[in-house]
Amino acid sequence: MVYARNGEYPELAQHIQDAQTTDNLPGKHGTTRYLTRLTNQTKITENRNTSCPSSLPRPTGKQCDEYPFASTWQGAKTGGSYSRRMIDARQNRSGGQALALFYLYNRIIEKDRFLVWIK
Image 1 (spheres, rainbow, N blue to C red):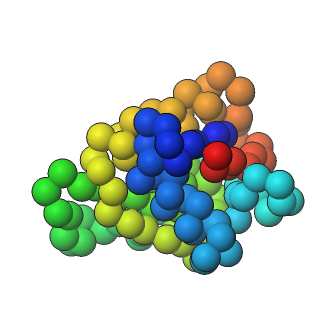
Image 2 (cartoon, rainbow, N blue to C red; image 1 turned 60 degrees about the horizontal axis):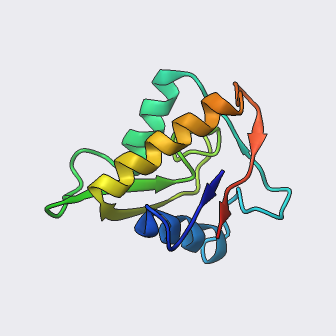
Image 3 (cartoon, rainbow, N blue to C red; image 1 turned 45 degrees about the vertical axis):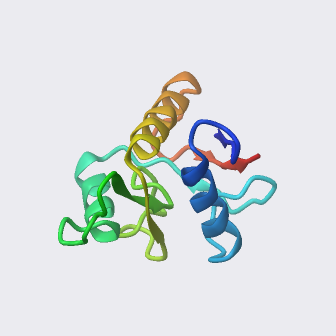
């Protein structure tokens, strides 16, 4: 998966890069610390609710973004360590749609490994 800091989702890309670099979270392109696809919707929801509970205040126009993605075994509930940041809501939604298309077009299924490249 590729996100660009000067692309459509700069806040999302910056969050992922910071999480990979500063917080040393997995999934960084060029490493062997892979993310692993999770398809169980209950577990995905648990990951999302752990990292971004509904009780967390959201500034106007912002959404809570989590990394590693809720749709991975490394997510907040199933993996443990995570980063969250309030980012532009449109970027968060569109970036999530791009991730879903990445899974679809590349046939990334349950327990398939992948990395995220921030350009």
